[in-house]
Amino acid sequence: MSPRTALITGASRGMGAAIARRLAKDGYDVAINDLPARISALESLQKEIGSTGRRAYIHAADVSDAGEVENMVGGAAEALGGIDVVVANAGVGRFARLTESSSEEIWDQVMGINARGTFLCYKYAAKAMIAQGRGGRIIGASSVAGKQGMGHASAYTASKFAISGLTQSAAQELARHGITVNAYAPGPIDTPMLGGFDLDEAGKKALIDSEIKKTLVGRLGKPEEIASIVSYLASQESAFTTGQTISVNGGQYFD
Image 1 (cartoon, rainbow, N blue to C red):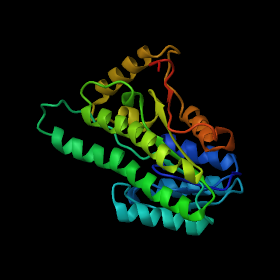
Image 2 (image 1 turned 90 degrees about the horizontal axis):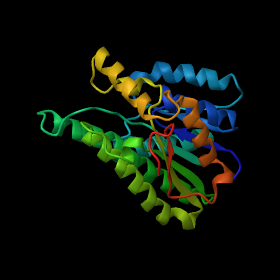
Image 3 (image 1 turned 180 degrees about the vertical axis):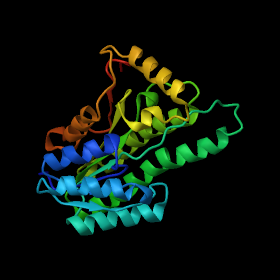
Image 4 (image 1 turned 45 degrees about the vertical axis):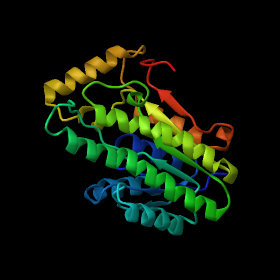
C-alpha cells in the first residue's frame, strides 16, 4: 500500500493537527475534520498543507453523529479519490467524581465522543475500505488512561479502555480485507486538551506537574512524537502490526 489519502478527525489543533502535517509530509493527501466552530483553524491548516504541494480537504462534522460520520467518510473519499487511512483522533477529556451530580451528563458526553465517535469512524472507514478493495489502515486514539484507570475521570478512562477493546475486535474482523486496526495511547502531551479537564489555572498546573513527575523522561510529550507513531502505523512497514494499542508515554506506564 503506497501513500494515498488519509482522513484525520479532531485535526484543528494539538495531536490531530500534528498528525495531519506528518501524513502530508509522508506524501498523503489529507481530509481534515473538526467541529464547525473550528473551521477557521482547519482553514489555516489547509493552507499550510497546501503550500507543501499536498491536497487538504475540510469536512466539519460531529463524530458522535452516525449520519455526519458517514457523510464525512464519503465526502473525503469522493474529494480525494478514496480513503486509505482513517485516524479517529477526535476526543474530549473531563474530570468528575463518581458521586458528583454532573457525572452522568459527563459520562454521556465523553462516551459519546470518545467511544461512540471512534466506533462510528471505524465502522464507516471499514465499509469504505472494503468497498474499495485495496486494504487500508484504521487508527484510533486511546490513552495512558486506557491502560491504567485515572482517578476522578471514570468516563474518560472507560472511553479509552473501550477504544483498545474496539481496536482488537475490529482488527480480527477486518484482517481478511487487508485492513489493519491499531491505536496509540499517549501519556501527557503538550496540547490544549491536557489543561482542559474542567480545572482552574492552579488545578491545571498541578495536573501537569503531577503528570510530568510520573514520566521517566521528566517532561511532557510533543504532538509530533505521537504523529511519528501514527506515521508508522499508517505505513506499509506496519503491515504485520494489528490489534495493538501502542503506548507513547515517556515511561509513565509499562505494558
